[in-house]
Length: 300
Image (cartoon, rainbow, N blue to C red):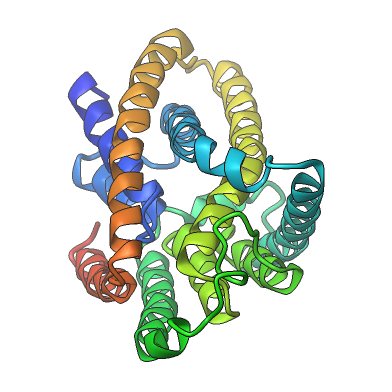
């Protein structure tokens, strides 16, 4: 793995992680095209650090909005925290159940099989991208047909300081759980679309979706870090130690570039949301699904 490859993956991760197009699908494809092994311990550590960079990009970009919306008063924070905890709990329940189900059905008889072993399979990434694209497309087209009605919504119900409702938060949490086991099923695209389809404005759905990301990312980082520790021990026992020092330096560099690319992506995403172009992300995911499946047929 070279510095150039790290920078490329960091930019891909930073741009795609915060756009509703599935960063994992894009990173996996980029790794395969560059001849890298997505399941190797070095790539696992790099992915952890890239996610860390994009998480800090989310915090930096949304902090002022969150302060005005969620931290304006003790009551506002209480409502926000309740919805965040509720949605995250649903994510954990659905996501963990799906992960266990997939591991037990697709890895029957393999005692140490993990869901991550499927993440590099483009034949699974392609349909997941298509599902996310369809969901985004439905939400975007429905939003365009309801623009006239939305103009009649009172300013009270459209105040930017409001959070999503408990019902909307619940659906966003449930859909986020579906994204955990399946690379290609965009977390941000699915959750924002779920919020829109249950009546939340695009801005509120976007803001709450990325708040969910900040909560769920540390848990994902912890899971991948634990996998890396186990892989390092296994490699040492097999007499093929992993150069964690060099990999860490590359990964820190990647986190910085992912942070910068993430800020650019967030600005672009907000502009597209404000201009009512959400459905175009759905079209992109459908096209990307076809491209990924084509690469699978070519042996990647």
